[in-house]
Length: 97
Length: 110
Image (cartoon, rainbow over all chains, first blue to last red; front, side, top):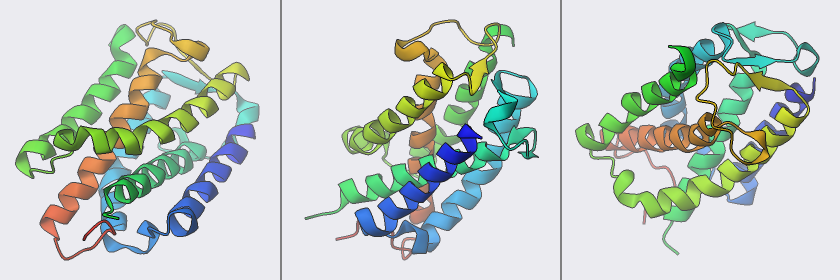
């Protein structure tokens, strides 16, 4: 379950980075959740593409085995952490001092 | 698709997001320096994770469905591109949302 553990760690770290590290707080904003609602179907679709065609494969011991649209559930956590941390930094960099 | 299988997913992501640059004038590519400062440190962290996971064989790639160009740390070219293309698409999405809903603050407004 190394993928499960790392994905969860990155997810928590991205939330802490957003809420406390930068104090940007995208997790409390409608614009972020609306954006993620748009991104999510594409995330599911592209994860499905990569996993159902076996472009990317996983060692069974690295994942829980729980799958959504063919992709390990860990992929969803990983994608959310990536999107949240990049958007948090995007806002942080754009903030006028 | 053959060896273009993974590249196909990246192309789809680019096509699905970059039109926002024109249609919604999100001006993300015009602010490419700000985008780079936001994306590169995060991409680096995720690529370190990628490198370790590949080394542990947590995940692996079908050699017949990638171009076969392997970069540093045994990471295929497509993975490097993934961590540029997906973050750009996410930034374009939130910028398009705020074009439609200008009163929804995201925190960088002056």
